[in-house]
Image (cartoon, rainbow, N blue to C red; front, side, top):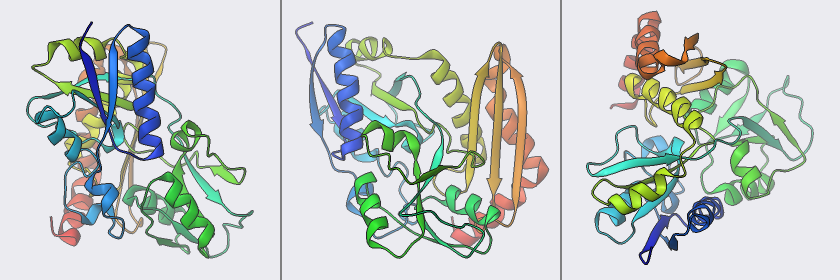
Length: 304
């Protein structure tokens, strides 16, 4: 194994933590590795909501290009940031053992949510679900890496901001004042890390496949198939969560209007052996329940 595998990553603290985790696992298997950092459009453009940037894979596109140009061999991402259709020539090699899928509300002090509050998030999904539950609240946009957003919360008059619990846990920034939002359906593949590589690079693909955690791969694939069929990406408030229970998968999915006033849910228990097409089938069922009208309105509103 004389070849050095070049691991591409964004340069935020969380992204580097993820890349180093993959590096340690590969080195434990006897591979030589090197980490190369790349800035993404999503990191550089912090004053515009993600859904207004108009780029598929706003956090992954630069690394995809670096891989196709042979600057890096593999890339490590938060799977929820990865488009459901990968660029030609790039394949998913491994989904690592998934961490917490929960969203949490971080506050500077205890907050009475029954009163009008201002809550920050850069996610359409979180915004819509929050307004569905708390229609008397105001939701404002927040962007930047985890550290930047935590600081913005401290410097602002807002009552709280919504984060993915897994990200804060990974870099040991989980604060004392937080509330688990167990009612909020997470983004498809939230809490999961993915490693991608070039289809033609058999050496690297063989290496990263050794890191795959099959239960995490099955659940996140089902969630991403649900998302892909709804054609949501970053432009619609879509949540999905699959959990393996014995020989079944418990699935919960949701689609909301942008203002949170309309919400369509679907819950199913699926035999494990039928999981391959389940995400697509449940998305089609949700569309028939009124999801098609909600998506049509979203696309008209956002002019997409």
